[in-house]
Image 1 (cartoon, rainbow, N blue to C red):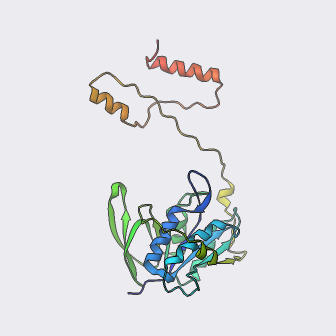
Image 2 (image 1 turned 90 degrees about the vertical axis):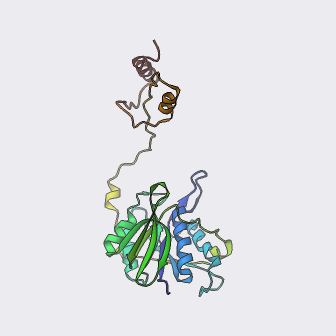
Length: 271
């Protein structure tokens, strides 16, 4: 059974603890799934900064792929050069129209930047392709269609059969990616493509956004009423959705202390 040509959309990631740049975990899982499926018929596609060195991590994952035409099991990546203010979806859609790939795989969302997870849906809309989200396993694939297991909440799975061409977004429940080897990562080929001026469009919606630091929403304290030990334990361990609490910002220390004392008195925690 012949597997189709597969394109994997990859992006730059960031370690959640150290903050160091590297591969995005969901994109790496998508590449692992693609390599297990199609092997030498897999290539990478990225739209972004040509100076991004973290993309070579993905090229280093080609070290265990047999029958690659390149010497030393070197993968290849096409990089569509774009600025941070440009829109990636028309660039990627135009490139995919002129390639022979009928199956595109990527992660659910990027780890840096917007991270909205809308890019695969925008590409599917522009290309007129099918889309399957949250895939954990590919069971069968040929030139006509693909059968996948979709990850659902609480460990459940759903089997879906979709006709190609198709875009698949890979869930974190997919198999973990293999290690990246330094040699193939350095030998991998990155082809930088300068898009046409008509295709490189600015992201007009992004230019209208207002950015501010994210804040953790405070949770209103819950008074545990008297009752049995089981009821008190259940009330203490439950996570309520909040009630008539009020979020106050930009208060002076004295004003914040007065509001806290007022709340404690209203809940009869202090006299």
